[in-house]
Length: 237
Image 1: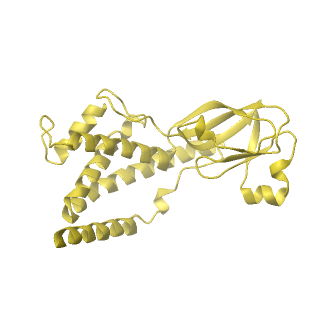
Image 2: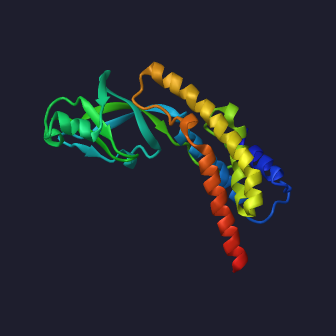
Image 3: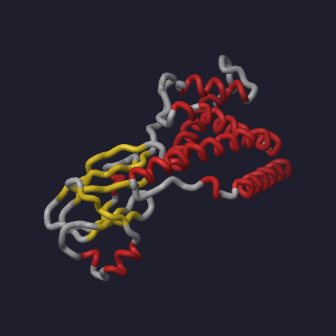
């Protein structure tokens, strides 16, 4: 599906005419489509690629998103075909309290958030790592743009878009949209499970978030509570 097809389906599903939508609706829908795709990539880690990353000699910490601008999380790091093993800061500290200033061939790495990476020991010469990473998709803007997530899940961008557009309609509109959010999350759970199986087989260092263990009912309850409160505040003013 193209961006235009997804957009028109969302506009139709919220009872608008795609040929003459309300002012600002097209912009709102496009933002919702991009938000839905970014969330899909984050929840499932379904988009991956392998890139080169230069590691500077005698340097421990790096902010990789300065060059890997779409990085979500590294899945595997190798140098010359040799695996660099992952660990936590606590692991590295327990193994060697001087790990931030130890010179030798690099064997371990740690990641904090999306933009802080540490290597230890620190090599005496610059070296190039091959990083297989999960990445966030480029922003959709043109009508002919095609989402990067698997085609079977393009319909879920319609589901998410309807949910986001319905949010502004108050509690009743939000409740109508929550059914589409549940559909979106159900399918993201299935996609995440597929990616997890594939990642385990590839022995990646990170697996997708386990959506089936997430208390969705509590989240939806809190969203509805917040929306009702906002409606009451608007009515009072």
